[in-house]
Image (cartoon, helix red, strand yellow):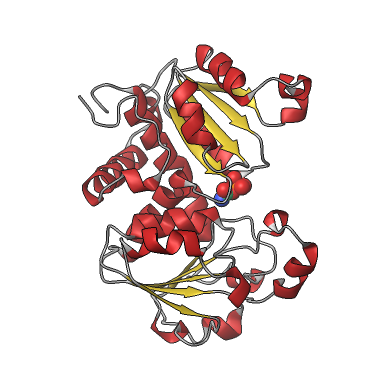
Length: 309
Ligand code: CP
């Protein structure tokens, strides 16, 4: 039996290097298949999405991914139009949606929400972002992008810049990178350093160097992963205003980088990556978003098929 069959995807910590490589090889395969062949993979299966927070890429790439492999989707992208407004609990909503579907995709503002949903759901649950905790399918997409664009992950020097305190993609990426031999630089304002309660967990997997100065290591990086300052997660707007616009990656900074370095961003972006960068060969964030569709189609295909595809 395929080891991902009916598996909940709650944390990237549950994946080792060998499992990630299996997903990447299957993603390479799915990208090469003819549309008619892809549509056989999960023909007639239904994905349900339940988003308690806004999303463009994650929800729509799951929508697109299930269609790519022959399935269909239904769901709630705006909870104000659901019975949550009448007071229905997350548990009951998940139980009901798992009756109508084969796999459930959940985004929720609370840490632990996806794990809780997996406990009450009769169908596999995929975490599409839980509070400030994790966004595992984003990390799979990010690692796939690095592997695809740099032809390897081991041996790379990777800088992660921006909101390292509240950015859940950062935590999942760091846990995922812990499977590889990489040099990691974490660049943020002092107040947005990686959360102290997660440092122990991250240090078990990899070592990193912290800095507040984006120029300190910029000429040595193979990958610069830029993140948005997450205004919506600050308890105090004054604190947000102090760090707003701390780092802006523009052509001046790009000139200091290696010729073959790549710039990634989970998106959405505000002003942290200048639009001048978009047309350079180093900008890979739109490719990264496209790979998200294929990595998610792969995960769904593996979760929904006993013998894989
Ligand atoms: N990267 C990401 O999670 O984007 P969305 O919030 O648009 O889904």
